[in-house]
Every structure is written in C-alpha cells, then in structure tokens.
Image (tube, rainbow, N blue to C red; front, side):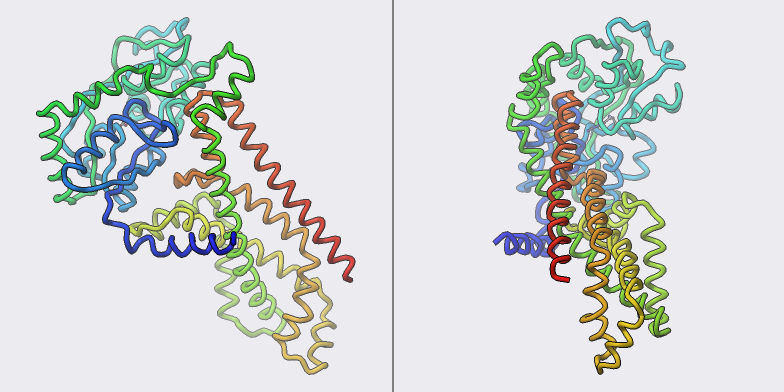
Length: 475
Ligand code: ARG
C-alpha cells in the first residue's frame, strides 16, 4: 500500500515537467510581512495578491515557491521561477541579471534597535554588530558603507538576535521592520532612513512577452486603485498573524502558540514526510550505486579486469567524497537540472542517493575484502562462475560483516537531509524554521525538531539491532 503510493508519487515527479509550464511560477522569500509571509500554511501578502491579480486579469494561474532570498535572482535566471515577487528593490547590479517591471511601491531601509539603545542615528552604526537579511539591499548598504554585517537567512532570526542582545541593530525594509517592532516589545525604529528604494517584479532577461504583460496590467492596477486596496488590506500590522510567543507567558502558552495555534504542527508533519521520503529513496539509490561500484572496484582489484570502469568509479568516489553534500545538492538543483522543472524531492533523492552511494560503496568493498580469498577459490572450484560466487557466497557474508557500518551510514544520511532547506525544500528542519520565523520562539521548534530526529534514529537503531541478532542466530 505504502509502496504503491510512494511509487505513484515518484512517477508523478517524473511526469511533472510534461505538464508544467502552463502555470506561472512565482518565486518569493516568504519571511517579509506584509509583502510575503506564511499564514495558516499558505503564503500570502501584498506581493502575492498583486501578482495573482495581474495574472488573473490575463487568464493565468500561478504557483508560489518559497526560497531563500539570496537564491531568488538565480532562480529567475535559471528558469526555476518565472516571476520574482519578493519586495525586490530595483538596483543597477540586479538590472544586469534580470529584467524589472515598472515599480509599484516606494520603500526604504531603516534601522531597528532595542529601546534602551545608544544608537540614535545612522552614524552611530560604525563598529557595531549589525544584522541583515543575506543578499538584500540592506546587506549591500551595510557592507558598502559601514562594515561586514551578520547575514541571516530571514529577518525574523536577525530580529530575535537583536532582541536577545546578540546584535546592536538590524537594517531592514521599513514596512517589514514596522511589523517586527509592533510584534516585539522592547524594540524601536529610528526615524532617519538609510536608503530610498522602489520595488518591482523581476523576470528572466529578455522575457519580453511576460514583462510587457505584467507592466501593462500593473499600470492599470496602479491607476484603478487596486494596488492601494491590496496594500490597505495588509495595513493593520497587528492583523498580520505572525504571533510571537509572549515573553512572560507560561510554558504551556508557548507550547500552544508554537505547535497548536494555526495548526503549526502541520509544518513538522509535512516536513517529516518529506524527510522520510527523501531518506528512504536515497538509501535505496545509494545502496544500489554502492553495490555496483563496490563490485566493480573489488573485481578490478582481484582480477585486474574492468580497468576503465574502475577508474570511473574512483573518480566518482573522489568527487563525491571530496566535496560537501550541500554543494552537491545545490549543483544538482541549479546546474544539472538548471533550466528543467524537476520536483525538489526528486532532486534531493538524486543528490543524497549519489552522495550516499560513494560511502556505501567503500563500506561494501571493505566487507568484500574482509572475506577470505579461499572462499572465492572454493566457490570457483565447485564450478560456480565468478559472478555466482560473488552473489551467492561472498556478498551475503560481506553484508553481514558491514551491517553496523551501513547502519551508521543510513543514520548519517537521514540527518544529512536536514540541508534540504538550501533548495527550499520543506523538510523537517525547514518546517521547524518556518515555525521559528512565525513565532519568534527559537527554543521550542529547534528542540522539537531535534527530538523527532532522535526518535527516528533510535527507532532505526533498534530495528538494526534486531536484524543483527537475527542474522547471528542464523549463523
Ligand atoms: N528590498 C530588499 C531587497 O530587495 C529586501 C527584500 C527582501 N524580501 C524578502 N521577501 N525577504 O533587497
């Protein structure tokens, strides 16, 4: 049953590229209220409403894809997204990379500090610890004019760090800054802005048709007041549901806000599903690759045949074991599947499967090597072929010997999938991050996610132990 469903999902993934393209893909970084943020499991906000209306007026539909802000421009360039709607400021640098629509909002960078701060104006920022969202114009401004800032993936983590005294200031766009200050007692905005900016949507360079459509409709919407209405709808910052946990509230209240309210536990459940799906299929892929490579390598070592295959395997092992898995994941996502529309779960399975395969290969090879040479000779002299002896005599014993090492590899793999968030795949870890960014509570989501991994690994270890005992008995 379970298997059938998994395979159904997998085959859907393979088919995905075929029907994709009919729907416009909007990319955003949904940690930027009131422009884009998570609410009740959905991504909403000014940008989202505006672009949806633009597309609706042209008879189109859209899907929204959430990612790290500093991946957005690349996503547009590589075709991972058609339109960026992300409170994106028009800058000269960015104009070289993507095409911008007409602008629809005036914006500015402002400074958030603690109420008791001695920072009163921009010039007081020199030499202080400043937090920004990575890749934003706030980041650029601070980097160029003040000094190296601390770069966070999302503003709410930076604000949390400011609140707890780890930073002296946060530089952020005015409207999101207002939301953060309204939600966090003890913070204030400084009056003097650092920059003056304008937001626009972005499309891939040269995508004339799409850009003209956006521009035409956007101008209509500016003229007929639609933009203003949409902004007004999100005006009351206190209506924006980014419920922080109350610093004076009880632990029980916190538990409620973090997990129960707005069914936030669903981020963890959905994340868990993704984590398990990715881990399960990459183990299968990894073991298959591992077996294949191990057999080639040990055959080449003992018989001197398969020279070219052996060489290729060595290159594979070298590259995969010589580079971090996060980079492999990013390369497979952005480069290998660059302009292809492939489901991220599939991308992750391929990346982790290929990665794990390298380690599994060496584990299995060490198992094969541990088997006495006499076994192969015995098998051959009984009239079994090389491959028959390998499969029937050597491999079963080898596997038994390396079972603990293999188990270890699977545990590592399961936890390693926690970097899925880098391609904005909402796995378990990322699910916890979303809750953290919504509630400003760092403690509970992190601990909860850690516990879930722990339980998973414990269950797995237990099952493995059972298996080892069974195999022992059968000896
Ligand atoms: N306006 C700034 C920029 O373009 C910040 C935008 C951040 N947007 C977001 N969705 N987090 O760099």
